[in-house]
Amino acid sequence: MSFLDLYLAQLIDPFRIGLLAALLLTAANTAPTLNRWIPIVLGVVFVAVLIPYSFGSSEDIAKAFAVGVGLISNVTLLAVLLGAKALYTRLT
Image 1 (cartoon, helix red, strand yellow):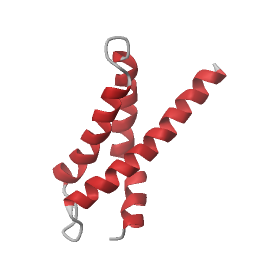
Image 2 (cartoon, one colour; image 1 turned 180 degrees about the vertical axis):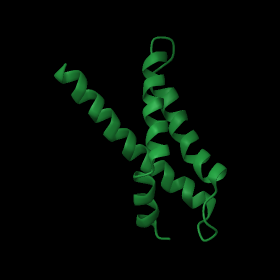
Image 3 (tube, one colour; image 1 turned 30 degrees about the vertical axis):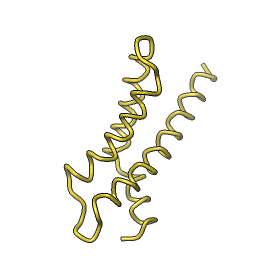
Image 4 (cartoon, helix red, strand yellow; image 1 turned 180 degrees about the horizontal axis):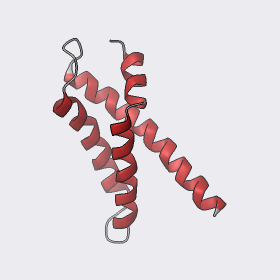
């Protein structure tokens, strides 16, 4: 599986999107006591490692490669979610 195929598959993964949305909600709730970006960065890394190691990737994909592509796709999804949140707060 090529980089682009794996990247696109991870972008439309509903479990990954749900985890990142929950991560943003959690980071918003803990922002007064913790820095906002520390939980977000740790959560992005956690989700990128969790999915390939818990659900397993196919045998032709190395787990380290899947984690690396997962980091890139998580940052992309997080940017979209943060943009949607900023648009929502601006409109309300």
